[in-house]
Length: 288
Image (cartoon, rainbow, N blue to C red; front, side):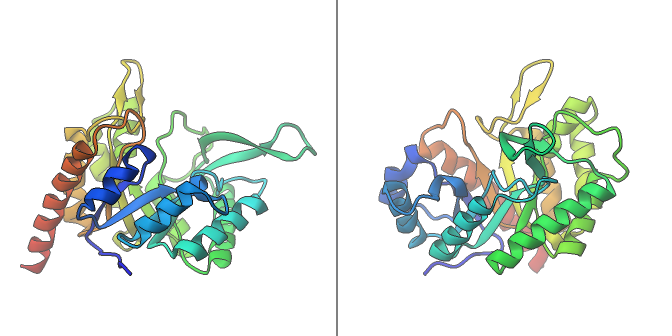
């Protein structure tokens, strides 16, 4: 059975690439999947995931736990995730620092918004996130990683910076951080500030020990807003931040995230190879 590499590069396992990946078997550190796509008890998709698991470590990345929801977690969702973790024995499990579940009105059952909505950086929001993360970890019997968001609004009652929020979340819950560098750049661009300097400062403010994985992706500049669409090659400014993150944090498992307008597999592997070269250089520097 394959094992994880602390300085490895992975790509997303997406349906259009299933046949090519399993035929070509490229050298990858891991593959990552959206956990919710494999909640069914059987079927072709789950069979492909099992086949991939025999060749590479798998990182399960969720989009539906709603870890920041004051309405609590969905029992069915957590049950399905627990079953998938038992089946796949993933290298890592992650989800987002967001809320997606809330009642439409007082007293009603929570509904899922199908979106990743940002939590406020307040003591109350932190308490909720800590409680939900701990419940997931107790059920899965493992620590999880929580990802920083690309957010298109900020809460007026924020009382702490985002890096401080994650540092405190990790200390209190025992979870780690899935550090999405593209999200840092997107947020800075939408705030109208220097994206490279701002993202580097964010990385400098985080406790290195809590970072368990890094995400790299492309974004779409729509003129009046920058959208985190994961539909293109990684931009040069994100690569600049990645180099800085490796210098600051050391080698970390890194995912090339591409979810829309999927290219040929060769394009994605070319992006992964670029990240692998930077990781190799980082390892050489650390060893020197």
